[in-house]
Image 1 (cartoon, one colour):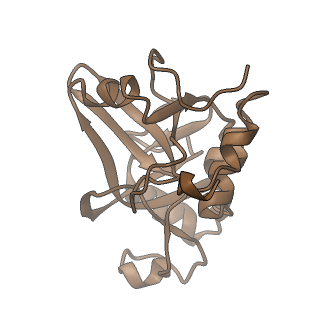
Image 2: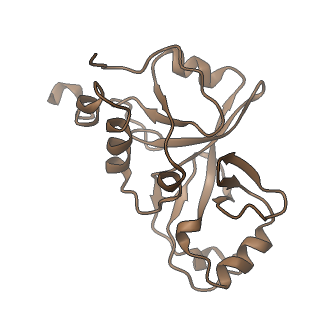
Image 3: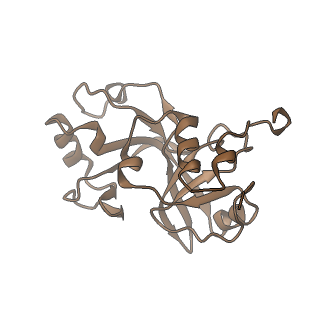
Length: 191
């Protein structure tokens, strides 16, 4: 079966990935992949995985050694705050999102690990986050704005993701019937 839009009855959960529908022309969410980190009766919290800013982590004055890691724009909300995911299950206060991937925790402990050589494949830093009020995300899914899927921990943790190529790869990874969506132009009149 060939699909042209997301289904309107998907039920997202923590650890799922939201993939924007192909014609969404939005600087924060157009052709983006969002990791759902929290989802409850009050709303949802997520981090955009493939929207990077050209800044060195050292420029953020976080007490990190000169490291070469990419910083992501997690979303348009609270853009003056830093959020992080990682594979360090021993960080106090960390919350497991999916098997082996954690959100937050004691940032000083993470900084110590980074300054002692923790590979950038083991953590990701985000400025801001994506947020939805109560029922807002489900309303957006019902209007077919998002595909809901799952991906591996290694794909979540990868910081070598080009904005649109990553989205295309994840759409194609949803299986037969989705490949044409990944290759659709942003402007459908160009099709």
